[in-house]
Image 1 (tube, rainbow, N blue to C red):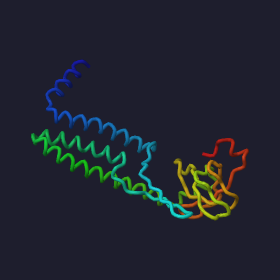
Image 2 (image 1 turned 90 degrees about the vertical axis):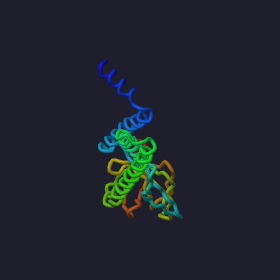
Image 3 (image 1 turned 180 degrees about the vertical axis):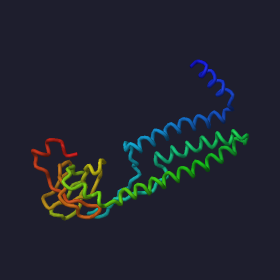
Image 4 (image 1 turned 180 degrees about the horizontal axis):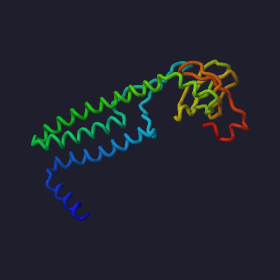
Length: 207
């Protein structure tokens, strides 16, 4: 083990300062990239580049394209670092290495952002998944007006993820924090809900 550490220290010491920087960036962000990939595969990570637009009594839910998500930034520095390592390994100048690394990193950043954008669109376009919300319980996030006079918002678990959905009710006003149950799918973005009886709401088993 000591021999390995001494060899690594000697290898690192023989590198130029610029190459050390590229290697440092490449190693650190490759580890982050790998961890992120594992979390994505096992379903523990969700991308948060989601936009909400509110208009009048209704609200729409749509995925917005963003090149500045956590995934895309990590992809930028990962490819930036490895491109710099390879470029300087071919005895090119530091400025050429920085230029090529930046271009490759930007390309990787936009490619990853675009792929995540398309994956999110595919996930949200599955309207049949909304039927998995039937009989599910959740909580009012934005007040739901009475007698279907407008839309509020509720949060609930659908297909293993917490979602924020538009909601209407036939009954009285449902205030923020009220525990509700989904009784009908109104359209691809809206649910009809009803307040849960107090004895059931107090159990805390609504998610």
